[in-house]
Length: 272
Image (cartoon, rainbow, N blue to C red; front, side, top):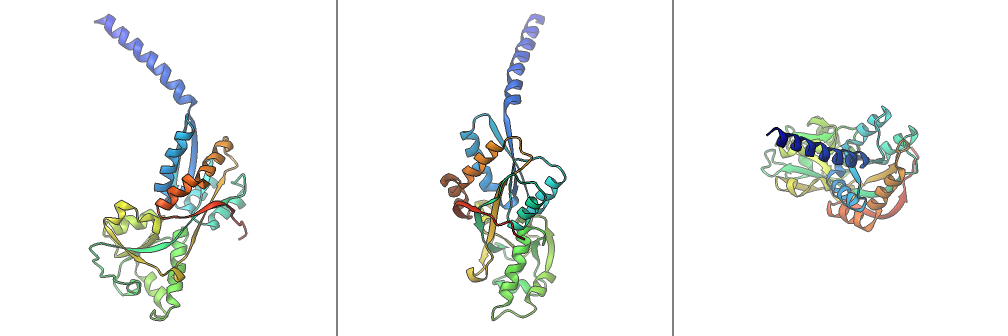
């Protein structure tokens, strides 16, 4: 029995000795990306790993503003993908980027409501009705700023009262750190309506919410830039990831998740 135990222990040590060096040799590409990119980038990450054996992609998804703050505080990453150019500009001004950012996708806003529709929200004008529980992303988050711009656009149209924006904002019961927080609140029935990106209405989400479209002429286009980070120790791998995002394959994934693809590298202006 003791002989058997010794052989088993020796085998375990040998296996561990083979596994640990393999893990130690594996490269990790760290991508900081806006929360709205979660599903699409996870798919692109799997594609990247298949094309780059020995490299694993690790994501940190959060509001763009939170990601920039983390990087300013010293968090290490290789790639940054923002949901707007404002926070990418902050990253550039902070000396975080190694190269000029490029736009890789666009997005649009929609209003979502629970399928049970407890707040009886039948149109965008109902967002201003007293008692309607609305959830938005915080103004610092790109989708929060886009949402408030869309509300101002709606307020300029016939049929909407002059105090439309004020009344909607008065109905806000929660300001979330990212768009995923808005989606979650509506899914759980904790709000009667929320403004999110079209890309966030994924198949699982669509099972429990209804979508109220915002007229194209009054909607806001969200621009998504991406850049290699200066502190990256594997900038070639980071460039490869961006190249995949910009490729026909990557753009096809983004389109599948209802992003508006760009199809080619478009320099992102870094003017304020």
